[in-house]
Length: 86
Image (cartoon, rainbow, N blue to C red; front, side, top):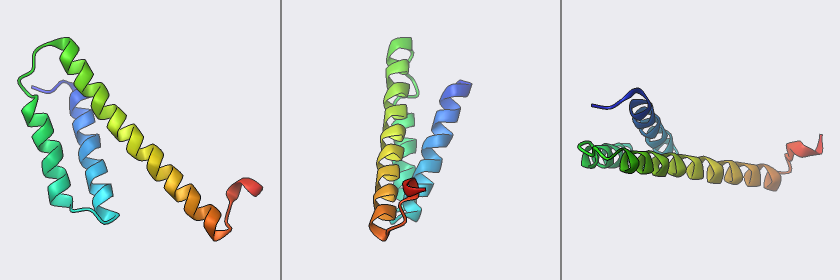
């Protein structure tokens, strides 16, 4: 059974998969990968391993968001719409 933080992380991962699919990914495949990763580890009982898995998922989400923000900022600069110029 997922606790609240695990469930929230699961939903966040599914939402990210949905978002990525709007950027050219395959929604069904991405969501299946998220589900598969959570199912694979659903019976884990070692609190340390669970925490490590949660941290890895959060890192993955954070890394994606960071790279996406960089990509969008680069596009804005290339278009000449650098919002940092004031």
